[in-house]
Amino acid sequence: MSDFTSLPDLALRSYRAGVVAASDESFEERENLIQPWEPRFSAETFGPKGQEYDGWETRRRRSPGHDWAVIRLGMPGIVRGVVIDTAWFKGNYPPYASVEACRFSGYPSAAQLNSTAEWVEIVPRTALSGDTKHEFPVSDERIFTHVRLNIHPDGGVARLRVHGEVVPDPDLLTGLTVDLAALENGARALACSDLFYSAADNMLAPGLARNQAEGWETARRRDDGNDWAIIRLAAQGIPELVEIDTTNLLYNSPGEVRVLGIDHAGEEPLPSPEDPAWFEVLSRTSVQPDTPHRIRLSATAKRATTHIRLDIYPDGGIARLRLLGTLTPTGTQAVTDRWFGGRQR
Image (cartoon, rainbow, N blue to C red; front, side, top):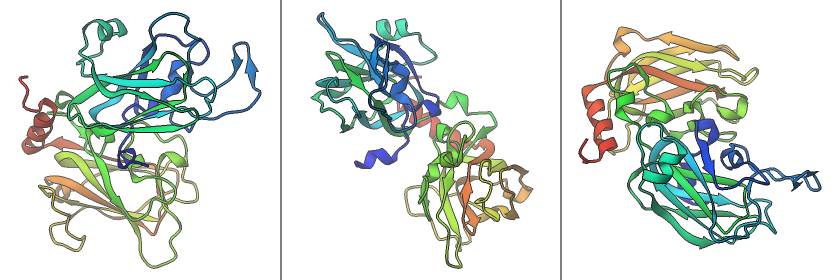
């Protein structure tokens, strides 16, 4: 797999993305393009429209032109790569596809996107194969809010994945109490001790985890150590409350957790947890299975913070990690600069 596939999927349904319009969905619904699960298939499952597929499928085009679908990204950001997956579509996949993107403020209608959006091509028209994941790196540094998948001329696509770096709108963060550790606000899990069952970024995802797979879960440790994850916050902020949610983890939640914080500017590697630059945000605390724990932080923990380290003892799973707080002036400036990128406001 390409390196970009480790980045968040900005077009994931469970990350609040939506398919706002499509030229045709005669055989299979457009919403299937952004479902979080891997495409499924059961042979000889025929409905009134023919064999059923887990994807988007248009009718056979008998006129000039091509089919398309417009996706509102759940989280705006810089697109680093696109995956067009034709899984299970073997005799009915599109021979070619391309992808365009645009940036549009507010909540535009499909008609507005069609008539006034400035679309730019991020994946040129390229040949596709059936039943294949096609990975396309993207080098455009602009921030996008919507993408348009074009298939030439028609056919079926199982999934569209749009991997990239989240860039939040500062108007939704500045001057408010926000989740500094939220994926949708630009936070990321930079490293973790173990991702045997699932990725650490899952803890930072929007909404509630519906099952164990939608959180972060480690393998069972057979030594005297403990598992951990390093989170880069959305920007420098002052934490006020931490939430450690073990929902759905009935027999594999950690026994205890601890959260450390650090104010670390620049791209240099973070110091080891023994370095005095780290401070205690939450002391080692017992946690219960299948429980959301919301803990107000002490005055000594309310310091400028850019990264946190979550330690779990000895291992197990966390459904969601939240860190409510406010951006500092430095943090506010950082998210504003990135969103506007030097453009006139």
